[in-house]
Image 1: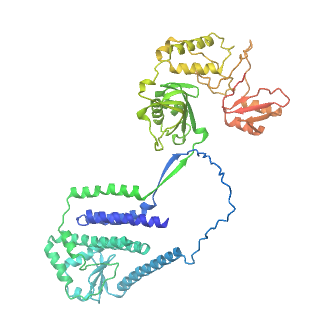
Image 2: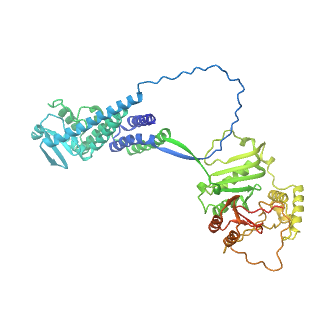
Image 3: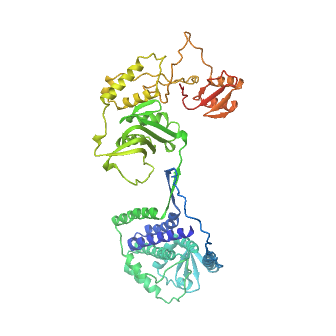
Length: 580
């Protein structure tokens, strides 16, 4: 892990440094370059630690069949080489070397700070122009640290130090260049083994000289005079003493490059262009050297919305048959007002053949609500040959398709049926007329016939629906007693979703039935009789049953057989089916 970070960090530093050398170093945008170098160094440490998380759908594990080996087991002894353990721990050795380097560079940094502190404490000093000038006995070139400017005492008293040199050093102090040096020195203590740290350190110090040179030139407006002053002063009788490494000192290094850059004037267009080049560079580094993780996203069962595809334009959501353009409105009103679309999933079933374009159109409507997780279970999916693709990449917006059969056709016209056939219309009218002539309170309903009616009705065109028998008004299954104040929405034509063979429903007596008791009161009454309570097929206590009814007024209750010695009360969140 640490090795990966070091490699990525070094690669980022190398790319940033190459960009700086080729695009920015020779330009006169020195303040921009200063912050670029510091930002690039920080970005080289941050980018390898960035983690971008992508949530994907959990894929069910595939069960692979394993063929047992029929080869006889040999009695021969298999010789196995035992790897020899090394007595020398290379990893410990590398950490030891790294630790020694950190200690060495750390002590060096502390020693430099201590030496500067001694110079400030032991030598005379005075404050002038917002900086403190320290006069030294040693013949050292002028240098700066924080707001202290160190000068040779003899030269200062003789006024032999040019004003341009003093202004140059004061600029280092005013612009706080020493803070950059302290930052790079601390980075060097930790990453002393990284060669690009030293390239950054050299470039930062050189850019400080550019900044100070520009301040002097802007005041004097004479390049040649300032250049001659620097050369003559540095060749003056100064002994070859070295200033402290963490201080900004005027010196011979990179004099030619400083003189070249001093005369450069970068235009605004060039500055904007070079700045914009940072955007693709940063994007490239983020994409190439950050970490990308995929996390499987699980969807709770109560956040799964089921739909049944009836035709090319209609879908059934629970008891509602809606057009495709109404799907988003129903989802937002009935479901997404309760929980967030990010944790919702839509499962679509299609018993009849369905074209891939129909699935895509429905998925597009669903995704306008923000729901991305869509899964389709179809008996047969028909598509054109140019729509078939292998190894489709799974993304958060991929519609997962499960089909028992995939059929490819030459064009869309071969599949799409715009209306029901004459035989289907005849079959529909016969069944619909049969049920429409029945007394609604004395109906015998067959599930297979209801499903067939829904299937043909879904295929019918608008004109066929207008000319055909009305869709039968089937009575709903016996509902649970409504909660106080609750209202039930009107049922659409195909409200029966789980209908089995049902015999005639017992008609009401001549007198109006009494008002049913509240569900909770009914449960308490059955608990007093010693009833056994079942919730979704599992036995629960009477106390738990009462608690469930108090917290949810949409629980269905089945008390049939409760007149026995030990009655059984079944509670369920699903509709109660009445079997024949």
